[in-house]
Image (cartoon, rainbow, N blue to C red):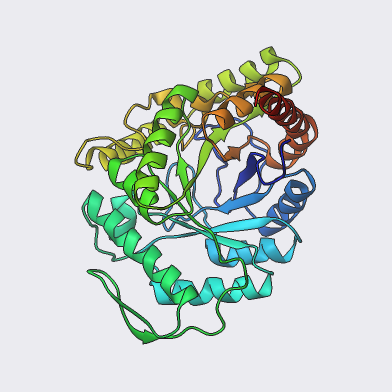
Length: 366
Protein backbone atom coordinates (compact mmCIF):
# COMPACT_ATOMS: atom_id res chain seq x y z
CA UNK A 1 0.00 0.00 0.00
CA UNK A 2 1.39 3.42 -0.97
CA UNK A 3 1.33 5.93 1.89
CA UNK A 4 1.52 9.72 1.57
CA UNK A 5 5.11 9.45 2.80
CA UNK A 6 5.99 7.24 -0.20
CA UNK A 7 4.17 9.32 -2.82
CA UNK A 8 6.12 11.41 -5.30
CA UNK A 9 6.05 15.07 -4.28
CA UNK A 10 5.23 18.02 -6.52
CA UNK A 11 6.85 21.45 -6.51
CA UNK A 12 6.60 24.45 -8.80
CA UNK A 13 9.00 27.23 -9.71
CA UNK A 14 7.83 30.50 -8.16
CA UNK A 15 7.78 33.17 -10.88
CA UNK A 16 9.28 35.86 -8.62
CA UNK A 17 11.44 36.73 -11.65
CA UNK A 18 9.95 38.32 -14.78
CA UNK A 19 9.93 36.59 -18.15
CA UNK A 20 8.40 33.26 -17.13
CA UNK A 21 10.22 29.95 -17.36
CA UNK A 22 11.09 29.90 -21.07
CA UNK A 23 13.35 32.23 -23.07
CA UNK A 24 10.71 32.77 -25.73
CA UNK A 25 8.49 35.55 -27.05
CA UNK A 26 5.46 33.28 -26.88
CA UNK A 27 2.62 34.67 -24.76
CA UNK A 28 3.05 33.68 -21.11
CA UNK A 29 0.07 34.49 -18.90
CA UNK A 30 2.32 34.49 -15.85
CA UNK A 31 2.98 37.43 -13.55
CA UNK A 32 6.01 38.05 -11.36
CA UNK A 33 4.14 40.39 -8.97
CA UNK A 34 3.07 39.44 -5.46
CA UNK A 35 -0.68 39.43 -6.11
CA UNK A 36 -0.30 36.92 -8.94
CA UNK A 37 2.04 34.80 -6.84
CA UNK A 38 -0.11 34.80 -3.72
CA UNK A 39 -3.03 33.50 -5.76
CA UNK A 40 -0.78 30.98 -7.52
CA UNK A 41 0.45 29.64 -4.16
CA UNK A 42 -3.13 29.18 -3.00
CA UNK A 43 -4.07 27.40 -6.24
CA UNK A 44 -1.01 25.14 -5.95
CA UNK A 45 -1.81 24.28 -2.34
CA UNK A 46 -5.43 23.42 -3.25
CA UNK A 47 -4.24 21.42 -6.28
CA UNK A 48 -1.99 19.01 -4.36
CA UNK A 49 1.41 20.64 -4.68
CA UNK A 50 3.76 20.16 -1.73
CA UNK A 51 6.46 22.78 -2.36
CA UNK A 52 7.16 26.05 -4.16
CA UNK A 53 10.73 27.12 -5.04
CA UNK A 54 11.60 30.83 -5.10
CA UNK A 55 14.36 31.87 -7.51
CA UNK A 56 17.48 33.93 -6.81
CA UNK A 57 18.70 36.50 -9.34
CA UNK A 58 20.67 39.68 -8.64
CA UNK A 59 20.99 41.01 -12.19
CA UNK A 60 18.80 41.23 -15.28
CA UNK A 61 19.30 39.04 -18.31
CA UNK A 62 17.80 36.46 -20.67
CA UNK A 63 14.35 38.00 -20.35
CA UNK A 64 14.48 38.23 -16.56
CA UNK A 65 14.55 42.00 -16.23
CA UNK A 66 12.95 42.18 -12.77
CA UNK A 67 13.64 40.00 -9.73
CA UNK A 68 12.12 39.91 -6.25
CA UNK A 69 14.40 38.79 -3.38
CA UNK A 70 13.50 35.16 -2.57
CA UNK A 71 13.57 35.04 1.25
CA UNK A 72 11.18 37.97 1.71
CA UNK A 73 9.04 36.73 -1.20
CA UNK A 74 8.88 33.22 0.23
CA UNK A 75 7.67 34.58 3.56
CA UNK A 76 4.86 36.46 1.78
CA UNK A 77 3.74 33.23 0.07
CA UNK A 78 3.84 31.33 3.35
CA UNK A 79 1.66 34.01 4.94
CA UNK A 80 -0.91 33.48 2.17
CA UNK A 81 -1.09 29.67 2.60
CA UNK A 82 -1.52 27.08 5.36
CA UNK A 83 0.08 23.83 4.12
CA UNK A 84 2.43 24.65 1.23
CA UNK A 85 6.16 24.52 1.97
CA UNK A 86 8.22 27.26 0.33
CA UNK A 87 11.89 26.79 -0.52
CA UNK A 88 13.88 30.03 -0.46
CA UNK A 89 17.02 30.19 -2.58
CA UNK A 90 20.23 31.29 -0.83
CA UNK A 91 23.48 32.17 -2.59
CA UNK A 92 26.65 31.73 -0.49
CA UNK A 93 28.75 34.83 -0.92
CA UNK A 94 25.99 37.46 -0.78
CA UNK A 95 24.51 35.57 2.21
CA UNK A 96 26.46 34.85 5.36
CA UNK A 97 25.29 31.65 7.11
CA UNK A 98 24.74 33.50 10.41
CA UNK A 99 22.32 35.95 8.75
CA UNK A 100 20.63 33.21 6.71
CA UNK A 101 20.25 30.94 9.75
CA UNK A 102 18.56 33.72 11.70
CA UNK A 103 16.30 34.80 8.81
CA UNK A 104 15.10 31.26 8.13
CA UNK A 105 14.74 30.36 11.84
CA UNK A 106 12.44 33.35 12.34
CA UNK A 107 10.34 32.49 9.27
CA UNK A 108 10.17 28.88 10.47
CA UNK A 109 8.85 30.03 13.84
CA UNK A 110 6.26 32.26 12.17
CA UNK A 111 5.00 29.57 9.75
CA UNK A 112 5.05 26.36 11.82
CA UNK A 113 8.13 25.01 10.07
CA UNK A 114 6.98 25.36 6.45
CA UNK A 115 10.13 27.06 5.12
CA UNK A 116 13.07 25.28 3.46
CA UNK A 117 16.22 26.50 1.69
CA UNK A 118 17.89 25.84 -1.66
CA UNK A 119 21.64 26.45 -1.60
CA UNK A 120 22.70 27.81 -5.00
CA UNK A 121 26.45 27.60 -5.53
CA UNK A 122 26.37 30.05 -8.46
CA UNK A 123 26.95 29.73 -12.19
CA UNK A 124 26.93 33.34 -13.49
CA UNK A 125 30.27 35.09 -13.05
CA UNK A 126 28.91 38.41 -14.30
CA UNK A 127 26.37 38.47 -11.49
CA UNK A 128 29.06 38.05 -8.82
CA UNK A 129 31.23 40.70 -10.46
CA UNK A 130 28.33 43.16 -10.65
CA UNK A 131 27.68 43.02 -6.90
CA UNK A 132 31.35 42.95 -5.87
CA UNK A 133 31.52 39.33 -4.76
CA UNK A 134 34.65 37.23 -5.45
CA UNK A 135 34.19 34.56 -8.13
CA UNK A 136 35.62 31.22 -7.01
CA UNK A 137 36.68 28.27 -9.16
CA UNK A 138 33.97 25.66 -9.79
CA UNK A 139 34.83 23.15 -7.10
CA UNK A 140 35.67 25.90 -4.62
CA UNK A 141 32.12 27.20 -4.97
CA UNK A 142 30.83 23.80 -3.91
CA UNK A 143 33.33 23.60 -1.04
CA UNK A 144 31.99 26.94 0.18
CA UNK A 145 28.40 25.72 -0.20
CA UNK A 146 29.17 22.62 1.83
CA UNK A 147 30.62 24.72 4.64
CA UNK A 148 27.55 26.98 4.39
CA UNK A 149 25.26 23.97 4.86
CA UNK A 150 27.32 22.59 7.74
CA UNK A 151 27.23 26.00 9.41
CA UNK A 152 23.45 26.37 8.91
CA UNK A 153 22.74 22.96 10.34
CA UNK A 154 25.14 23.48 13.24
CA UNK A 155 23.60 26.83 14.18
CA UNK A 156 20.09 25.35 13.97
CA UNK A 157 20.85 22.29 16.11
CA UNK A 158 23.59 23.25 18.58
CA UNK A 159 24.19 25.73 21.35
CA UNK A 160 27.68 27.19 21.65
CA UNK A 161 28.35 26.31 18.01
CA UNK A 162 32.01 26.44 17.02
CA UNK A 163 33.18 25.89 13.45
CA UNK A 164 36.54 26.36 11.76
CA UNK A 165 36.30 26.26 7.97
CA UNK A 166 38.17 27.84 5.09
CA UNK A 167 35.24 30.15 4.31
CA UNK A 168 33.27 30.48 7.56
CA UNK A 169 34.18 30.55 11.24
CA UNK A 170 32.01 30.56 14.33
CA UNK A 171 33.01 30.75 17.98
CA UNK A 172 30.69 29.66 20.77
CA UNK A 173 27.60 30.96 18.92
CA UNK A 174 24.08 30.21 20.16
CA UNK A 175 21.01 31.10 18.09
CA UNK A 176 17.73 31.54 19.95
CA UNK A 177 15.06 30.79 18.98
CA UNK A 178 16.05 27.97 16.73
CA UNK A 179 13.75 26.90 13.87
CA UNK A 180 10.48 25.16 14.61
CA UNK A 181 10.35 21.39 14.27
CA UNK A 182 10.98 19.85 11.81
CA UNK A 183 14.19 21.65 10.85
CA UNK A 184 14.15 23.46 7.49
CA UNK A 185 15.02 21.00 4.73
CA UNK A 186 18.17 21.80 2.76
CA UNK A 187 18.03 21.49 -1.03
CA UNK A 188 20.84 21.98 -3.55
CA UNK A 189 21.25 21.62 -7.30
CA UNK A 190 23.90 20.65 -9.83
CA UNK A 191 25.06 17.76 -11.98
CA UNK A 192 28.85 17.97 -11.70
CA UNK A 193 30.92 15.55 -9.68
CA UNK A 194 31.41 18.19 -6.96
CA UNK A 195 27.66 18.86 -6.75
CA UNK A 196 26.77 15.19 -6.47
CA UNK A 197 29.46 14.48 -3.90
CA UNK A 198 28.31 17.43 -1.79
CA UNK A 199 24.73 16.15 -1.86
CA UNK A 200 25.93 12.71 -0.81
CA UNK A 201 27.57 14.24 2.27
CA UNK A 202 25.34 17.02 3.57
CA UNK A 203 22.13 17.85 1.67
CA UNK A 204 18.61 16.59 2.38
CA UNK A 205 17.58 16.99 -1.26
CA UNK A 206 19.41 17.08 -4.59
CA UNK A 207 17.89 18.85 -7.60
CA UNK A 208 19.03 17.85 -11.06
CA UNK A 209 18.20 19.36 -14.44
CA UNK A 210 15.67 17.69 -16.69
CA UNK A 211 16.77 14.54 -18.49
CA UNK A 212 15.65 11.12 -19.72
CA UNK A 213 14.68 8.41 -17.26
CA UNK A 214 17.83 6.45 -18.10
CA UNK A 215 20.16 9.41 -17.50
CA UNK A 216 18.41 10.39 -14.29
CA UNK A 217 18.71 6.82 -13.03
CA UNK A 218 22.51 7.03 -13.46
CA UNK A 219 22.64 10.13 -11.27
CA UNK A 220 20.29 8.70 -8.66
CA UNK A 221 22.26 5.45 -8.38
CA UNK A 222 25.56 7.34 -8.15
CA UNK A 223 24.40 9.77 -5.45
CA UNK A 224 22.60 7.16 -3.38
CA UNK A 225 25.61 4.80 -3.40
CA UNK A 226 27.93 7.57 -2.25
CA UNK A 227 25.43 8.75 0.37
CA UNK A 228 25.18 5.24 1.82
CA UNK A 229 28.96 5.12 2.09
CA UNK A 230 28.76 8.36 4.08
CA UNK A 231 25.94 7.06 6.33
CA UNK A 232 23.78 9.77 4.82
CA UNK A 233 20.42 9.79 3.00
CA UNK A 234 19.46 12.20 0.24
CA UNK A 235 16.23 12.58 -1.75
CA UNK A 236 16.12 13.44 -5.44
CA UNK A 237 14.17 16.16 -7.24
CA UNK A 238 14.02 16.48 -11.03
CA UNK A 239 13.24 19.58 -13.08
CA UNK A 240 10.55 19.39 -15.75
CA UNK A 241 8.55 21.80 -17.89
CA UNK A 242 5.00 20.47 -18.07
CA UNK A 243 2.74 20.95 -21.06
CA UNK A 244 -0.42 19.01 -20.23
CA UNK A 245 -3.21 19.25 -22.78
CA UNK A 246 -6.26 17.20 -23.69
CA UNK A 247 -4.44 15.73 -26.70
CA UNK A 248 -0.79 15.02 -27.44
CA UNK A 249 -1.05 17.04 -30.66
CA UNK A 250 -2.11 20.14 -28.70
CA UNK A 251 0.77 19.74 -26.25
CA UNK A 252 3.36 19.23 -29.01
CA UNK A 253 2.04 22.25 -30.87
CA UNK A 254 2.64 24.41 -27.78
CA UNK A 255 6.21 23.11 -27.49
CA UNK A 256 6.81 23.82 -31.19
CA UNK A 257 5.52 27.38 -30.78
CA UNK A 258 7.78 27.97 -27.75
CA UNK A 259 10.82 26.88 -29.78
CA UNK A 260 9.84 28.78 -32.95
CA UNK A 261 9.33 31.98 -30.93
CA UNK A 262 12.52 31.54 -28.87
CA UNK A 263 14.73 34.61 -28.49
CA UNK A 264 17.94 33.40 -30.20
CA UNK A 265 20.18 36.15 -28.83
CA UNK A 266 19.04 35.58 -25.25
CA UNK A 267 19.15 31.76 -25.53
CA UNK A 268 22.66 31.80 -26.98
CA UNK A 269 23.89 34.27 -24.36
CA UNK A 270 22.44 32.09 -21.60
CA UNK A 271 23.94 28.99 -23.20
CA UNK A 272 27.37 30.62 -23.38
CA UNK A 273 27.35 31.43 -19.66
CA UNK A 274 26.03 28.12 -18.37
CA UNK A 275 28.20 25.97 -20.62
CA UNK A 276 31.27 27.91 -19.47
CA UNK A 277 30.22 27.25 -15.88
CA UNK A 278 29.93 23.52 -16.58
CA UNK A 279 33.25 23.35 -18.43
CA UNK A 280 34.93 24.92 -15.41
CA UNK A 281 34.42 21.71 -13.43
CA UNK A 282 37.46 19.37 -13.45
CA UNK A 283 35.59 16.73 -15.47
CA UNK A 284 34.20 19.37 -17.85
CA UNK A 285 30.64 18.40 -17.06
CA UNK A 286 27.81 20.33 -15.50
CA UNK A 287 24.08 20.83 -15.63
CA UNK A 288 24.06 22.04 -19.25
CA UNK A 289 26.99 20.11 -20.76
CA UNK A 290 24.81 18.19 -23.25
CA UNK A 291 22.12 20.84 -23.80
CA UNK A 292 21.06 21.84 -27.31
CA UNK A 293 19.65 25.23 -28.32
CA UNK A 294 16.12 23.82 -27.96
CA UNK A 295 16.91 22.47 -24.47
CA UNK A 296 18.27 25.84 -23.33
CA UNK A 297 15.04 27.64 -24.23
CA UNK A 298 13.88 26.26 -20.86
CA UNK A 299 16.40 27.34 -18.22
CA UNK A 300 16.88 23.95 -16.56
CA UNK A 301 16.48 21.49 -19.47
CA UNK A 302 12.84 20.96 -18.53
CA UNK A 303 11.79 19.78 -21.99
CA UNK A 304 14.17 16.80 -21.71
CA UNK A 305 12.05 15.21 -18.98
CA UNK A 306 9.24 14.94 -21.55
CA UNK A 307 6.23 15.77 -19.39
CA UNK A 308 4.54 16.92 -22.58
CA UNK A 309 1.32 15.28 -23.71
CA UNK A 310 -1.97 14.12 -22.27
CA UNK A 311 -2.56 13.81 -18.51
CA UNK A 312 -2.36 10.02 -18.88
CA UNK A 313 0.99 10.14 -20.69
CA UNK A 314 2.46 12.58 -18.18
CA UNK A 315 1.28 10.55 -15.18
CA UNK A 316 2.88 7.40 -16.59
CA UNK A 317 6.18 9.23 -17.14
CA UNK A 318 6.15 10.62 -13.61
CA UNK A 319 5.66 7.14 -12.16
CA UNK A 320 8.52 5.88 -14.37
CA UNK A 321 10.72 8.59 -12.81
CA UNK A 322 9.62 7.50 -9.36
CA UNK A 323 10.54 3.91 -10.14
CA UNK A 324 14.18 4.91 -10.75
CA UNK A 325 14.36 6.79 -7.46
CA UNK A 326 12.94 10.28 -8.05
CA UNK A 327 11.16 11.65 -4.98
CA UNK A 328 9.98 15.04 -6.29
CA UNK A 329 9.16 16.66 -9.63
CA UNK A 330 9.87 20.40 -9.87
CA UNK A 331 7.59 21.91 -12.49
CA UNK A 332 7.54 24.96 -14.70
CA UNK A 333 4.53 26.00 -16.78
CA UNK A 334 3.71 28.47 -19.54
CA UNK A 335 0.59 29.95 -17.91
CA UNK A 336 1.12 29.15 -14.24
CA UNK A 337 -2.21 29.73 -12.52
CA UNK A 338 -4.44 27.91 -14.97
CA UNK A 339 -1.93 25.15 -15.73
CA UNK A 340 -1.14 24.41 -12.09
CA UNK A 341 -4.89 24.05 -11.50
CA UNK A 342 -5.24 21.78 -14.57
CA UNK A 343 -2.24 19.69 -13.50
CA UNK A 344 -3.66 19.25 -10.01
CA UNK A 345 -7.10 18.32 -11.33
CA UNK A 346 -6.11 16.10 -14.24
CA UNK A 347 -2.58 14.74 -13.66
CA UNK A 348 -1.94 14.31 -9.92
CA UNK A 349 -4.98 12.03 -9.33
CA UNK A 350 -3.77 9.75 -12.14
CA UNK A 351 -0.29 9.64 -10.56
CA UNK A 352 -1.80 8.68 -7.22
CA UNK A 353 -3.89 5.95 -8.84
CA UNK A 354 -0.84 4.53 -10.62
CA UNK A 355 1.20 4.67 -7.42
CA UNK A 356 -1.50 2.74 -5.58
CA UNK A 357 -1.66 0.19 -8.38
CA UNK A 358 2.10 -0.34 -8.58
CA UNK A 359 2.24 -0.49 -4.76
CA UNK A 360 -0.43 -3.19 -4.70
CA UNK A 361 1.43 -5.16 -7.37
CA UNK A 362 4.64 -4.94 -5.34
CA UNK A 363 2.90 -6.21 -2.21
CA UNK A 364 1.32 -9.09 -4.14
CA UNK A 365 4.74 -10.11 -5.45
CA UNK A 366 6.29 -10.32 -1.99
